[in-house]
Figure 1: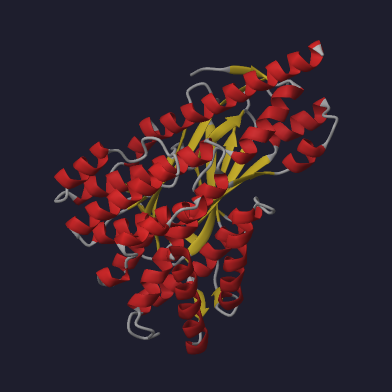
Figure 2 (figure 1 turned 90 degrees about the vertical axis):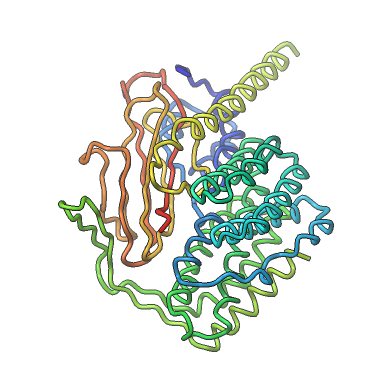
Length: 306
Length: 145
C-alpha cells in the first residue's frame, strides 16, 4: 500500500490524463489548471509544484438511496405505478440509455425497498443487474447479491447496505474505467427518477405535503450540481444531450427562489453530543412554476425511459 | 525512435500504475472506509481518489433539512494526516477536524444547505521533491429513521 513517488513530467502528463477522467464517480472531479497543463508543451518544476498543490473539486448529488430516504421522511407514500415498468428494459440498447436507466432502476429499487416492497425490490435489483452487465460493469451486482437481498428482505439495514454497495460498485467501476460520462449519466438517471416520483406524489398540489414540496424546491441546488458535473465533459455527445435537457429544467428552477435570511450556524448540545446546523431561509415557488416543473420533469423522465 | 519507444514504455507503465492505484482506492474505500459509517446508512456515492501530499480538494454537497448525517474521511496509512473542514457558502467554518481531532462528524440539519467539505493533505517535508500519494475517501452516511 505504501508508495513513495517521484513525480517526473511524464508522470504528471499521465496523471493528468487518467486522474482527470477517472477516480470519482458519483461526483465528478475537476483539477484546476489541468487543462492548461495538459495543453502546454512545456512543464517546468514550478508548474509541477503548482499542479500538485492545485485544488480538486468534486460535486456530490443525492444518491438514489438518499433521495428515496428524503421522500419517505417527507411522509410520502408508495405508489408502484410510478416506477419504470420492468419490461422497458428491452428498449435500452445504447450505453447512455443503459446508464440512465441503471440510475432509474436503482432509484426505483431504493424507493420500493424503503417501503418494504420485497418482490418489487428483487425484480428491480435484477433489472439493475442486467443493465450493469450490459454496460460491462464487472461484479457490481452478481447472483449472490440478489440471493442475499432475497434472504434478508426482512432486515432493512442489510437491504439498504446491499443497495448502497451495489450502487457504489457500479459508480466506482465506471469512473475507474475512464467512463465518467456514463457514471454521471447513472447519477442523473437516478436523480431524475427521484424527482419524478416526488413530484408525482404531490398530485400537483403545493399544499398537500409541504415537506415534500420543500424537498422538491431544494432540488434546485442539486440541479446546479448536475450542471457542474456535466461542465467537465463539454463536447461529449452524451454529456451535451444531458446538458441540453438539464438546461430546460434550469429555466424553470431559475424561477424558484431560495434565500438564506440568516447566517448558517452549527450548535452542539454537549449533553447529547448532537450538532445541529441551522439557518433561516425563504423559499418561494408559484403554482404556475410548479406546474411547469412537474410537466418538464415528466417529459424528461419519459424521454429517458423510452 | 528509441526515445519514442522509451517514452511510450514510460507512458504504459504509468498508465498501468494509475489504473491499478485507482482500483486499490476502490478496494480501500469499500473495505476500510465504509466501516466508519457505524449506525448510519452509507449513501452509495463513491468519493475517493488518489491525493498527493500538500494537495487540497473540495466536495460540494447539499444536506437536507430533517436528516441526520455522518461525514467520514479516511486515508491510506502511507499519507500524512488529512484534515477536513466543513464550510458554508459564505466560507464560514462549521467544523474543523484539526481542532476536533476526529475524522468523523455527525450532525443534523434544521435547514437545507449546500455545504463544502474541504480536504487538506499535510506535507511531511514541503521542500522535498519526493511526494507521497495515497487514497483519500470521503463517505456520507444518513440516519435511517
